[in-house]
Length: 427
Image (cartoon, rainbow, N blue to C red; front, top):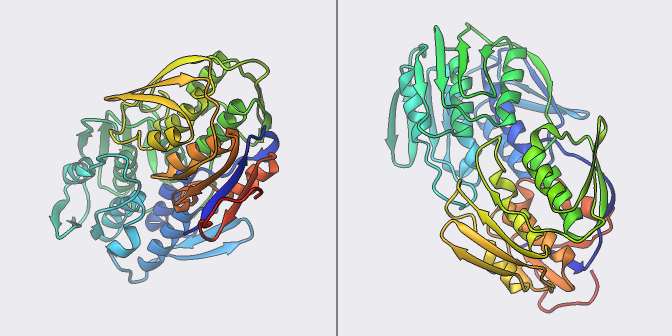
């Protein structure tokens, strides 16, 4: 099983380029099921989840081919499978995003219940209730969702809590429904706004994406389009935190600040200098790090996907910081691993109290989910000595060539095919 070997401490400095957003690319790929013409996407990150989604779409009959930096997908009108089997969806929760488009285009779909990171309960009941509100007949049987509708019809549905993939699924399904659909209490993440932009290029009629209420006027068909995926705000935030944690100075080309406001505000308050330009984001940390509390929340709140990385940052702050996780109940699994490196963190329910600054030291640690992997890598760069980070297959789901980008920033990190039997002195 592959791992990272990291020798620290290292001060991150230099320049890297932001990758495309995995969480925007996956629904964009699923949208190819709706198009009668080819869909050309560029800026897709080279990560495991993108490869998994391509495999799933291929099974469903979507042809895809790389054309330079772009990926061309064509569903066409050929006979296609409506079945998304467990073997193809077990590692990725976003696989449920094919349910709405399949049902809208074919009138029937059978999709296995999805997998992904074990960070808490993430039911799809709202996806199913929303499809039923649009006229679908839905059944759960033997771990599969089976849905049928001769043609979906417009209707009204209110999410009892905002859900990103639920909003995306119903948004795509409603595009081909007969009549107008109104969705209330929608998730407001920028990736939803981005999906609506793509669907609009394909001929969809959507108003309000990025707000709590979205209105969709159904159309008969969707067409070919060309689209570039937005930069990955979570990847950008991870590298900014890494530079802040190590007292570094970096510039991330192509990074946008608009969707990172909660993180940038906390970084500035903690003593970092930020530079924002049309070409990207820069950060330096000239002073000691001040502790600042956070509370995770759906967008536009502080993103839960940056909570673990921020916790690693606060181990280097002078004082106590409190982190409250309100989105996922099992998202403190990285705490015992940070403790193995010397972190002083105490958990009380949904609160984590981080006491710093702590002189972290290298250790053998194990990643438990995608963002916990990034947290441990950042901690290892700041720690004295050698750290082995195991189970980095989690990391590969969402970060494009992370070790190479970190090497560009001066980190001493390498990927090993298997964990070494004993520690060595240099990577």
